[in-house]
Length: 115
Image 1: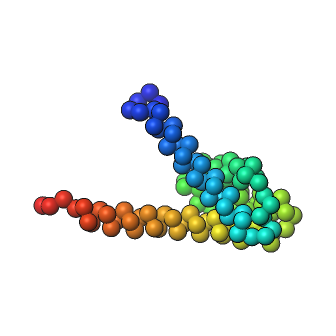
Image 2: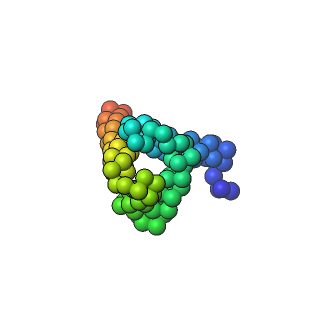
Image 3: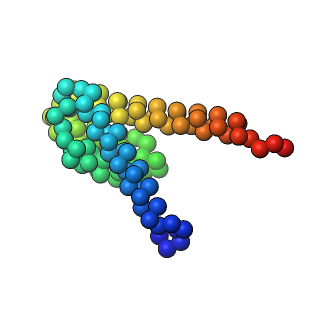
């Protein structure tokens, strides 16, 4: 933190990003009747435990999904509502990455400096 040029902005953007992750998970709850009654606290718990999956494996590929799905299965004592929530959340995140990557590549070719 000492070497960060603007630590206030760094903290603000970090909190902004984590808030985005939290609400992307929370919004997925409303897609299904079984999970519509889950609270923001539940989303926070899933996000916190899912973060360990990202920490322990490079990029969290696989571990995050397993942890979140396992927690949802334990909450409902059934796999029925857990799998669709997981797939909706994963699909939303992957879709967002693809859209932003496409926009970045388009902008990069459009703003290419003359040679």
